[in-house]
Length: 112
Length: 111
Image (tube, rainbow over all chains, first blue to last red):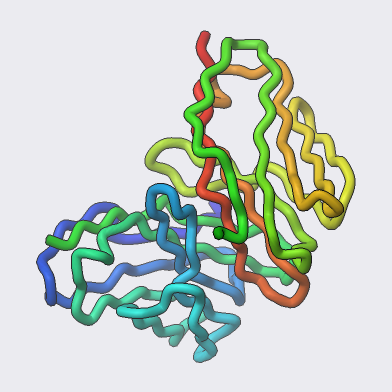
C-alpha cells in the first residue's frame, strides 16, 4: 500500500529537549516536505527536499532542521523545542512536478 | 492579509443538501488549484485538482475556478454524512511545488 508514515503520532515533551519526527514514504518519490497545521492558519510549509541531499526552507523554517540522506526518509528535527512549536505536523511527498501531494497521518506535538 | 482566505465554518447541512465551499486569494500567479479533504485525526487527501480557470466535475463534486475574480469553489451535490470533514483549498504557481493552503472549512452533514 502506497503511504507516508510518520512517527510518533503523538508526543508531549518539555522545552529544550531535542526530538526527531520521522517520515518515510514507499512510493519512490523525489519530493518530500514538512508542514505544520495550526488553528486559523492552515497548513504552512516548514522545509522541503527536491531529492537526496537537497533541502530548502519553506515559509516557517525557524527552529527546525531536516536531512535527506535516503530517498525514502525525511526526518524533522527540533533541536531545542519551544512551546510555540506545539502543533500538528504533516509530512508529504510527490513524485511528479504537478502531481498529487500525499500526506502522512500527522504527528501531534505538545511542548510544555 | 492572508494570501488565501477561507471561511472556517462550521457549516452544518442536512443530508442531501448541495454544499458550496469557497476560497478567495490575492496572488494572481496561482495557476494550480486543489481541494483537499481532511477527516478528523487524518492527513489531508486530494479531492479535486484544477489547472487555471474553468470547471471540473468528479461524481458528486464540482470544482470551479474564476481567476478574474480570484475565487474558487467546491460544490458537493447530494451531500452524505460521510462528507463530514474539513475541506482545505490549496493553490500554487508554476515552478513552485509548495502549496499555499486556506485555513479550512469544517463541514457537518446531518443524517
